[in-house]
Image 1: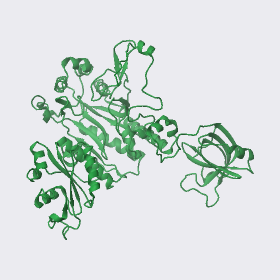
Image 2 (image 1 turned 180 degrees about the vertical axis):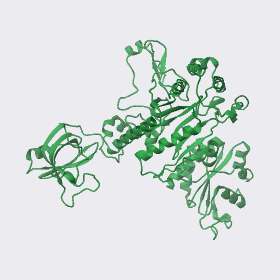
Image 3 (image 1 turned 180 degrees about the horizontal axis):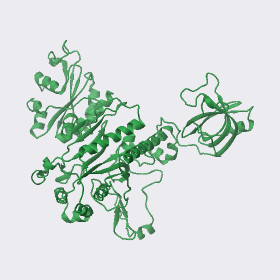
Image 4 (image 1 turned 90 degrees about the vertical axis):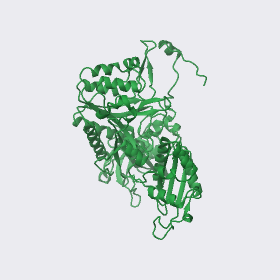
Length: 602
């Protein structure tokens, strides 16, 4: 054995013991006859001391040590001298007086220090990921991910779910993003597709009588990346037979409260998880992913604005648009530069602009709007809208003296996105969201379809296998936009953790949904024939969920990007700098696969 304790283990109770440690040289300090080394492994740091008087050979060799050399040391645990303890380290009360030193391996000078507070380009970090993962923060994240998986697996197994692996090589089926495809050598011109999710497979398992299935499923989606997306990610995927929506949501709540109780008992998790309909979430927060840790709810000012006399508002309303607002409490003193910054922020979300209304904190002695005068208001529309109209807007939005109203006008979908993003940004700036609280919410009753302007047709809000409410089935023929689906999302602190639904089990209904979103009968038979055949042989009522493992670990770890909780992620450009992937393959391989690469001209 290279060691009989890890670097983070020794304590004052081990004083006097002769032990062997092994790890990386984290830091070296020379003090003449004494050389100090901070030795590091996955468990932490241990100070080791080389004394020229007690171990001259080891002391001499210690002078050659450099950062990240791998060494083995043997010696006696002793208490640090009074005043030299390090209260920030679990091992800070003791040190190892070395008698023997063995250099196991040397290291080049690393491209960056092994510290948690790094300011290094992501491309450099990922190219040297084997160095980056040595940082305590990264190891802690990987350990947290492991713990979440183990807790989830234990919970699911204890509740009757079978862990079943589904294939990675499948047939390409449309599920909202582009597929990653794999050419077949033995079937030239044919391709496998990497699954965007195990959707059809888990439904077929329900038809097969499995009853309850789960797996930590690897999913692949060729889509534009952002902070909570990667080309390949992991889902906690599950499906249940003979269930209604409430049954699935109960399992979800129990699973996540168990995960947090076992991995982050310091966090406050209010239960039961509240439920918002999709319509209510959009109305109150402008988003179906609301952060409930703070208020600042969105108000609708469309009716007031329509008769305000302000041309911009009236033209927006006349064209079918909306006027919505949030109130930033205590921000009436925001400068022109600050509000200009907010204007640029909402423009990055697609809005045309932003109208601020500052209500002076000193307005009126009562602190109410009643005594507010035009002189107490600062706004670009101050001279275009009457005082009473401005007060009516403020009352509707819940603004008072000292507050800043922020108004966005335009097409409803654009305004909702922009006002929701603005709400999140102001919540962050004003530190309204308690980081020690996790506020889960179920968002339910989504429309089954949404209109796709690019395709000029209907698209599935979640996916094509989601069932309409029984009372809405007849609307599939007459008014698809009014159909509410048995769809549900789990959201936490403004992050969507997963989506699910009760599934369609009637072949005729499933074919009707396929037709509504533009799939021809030939396409349906070719891409979904296996599932439709299964429905003809006794499909039980069933439903389930695909939950983003990376996202919940990201939240638990307090990270802003899922790359920080994945061992070997891709960059924002979907590149792996460590392996230089993707990369060309040889002409011999291309010939073997009957593939010819066409120059795109880029």
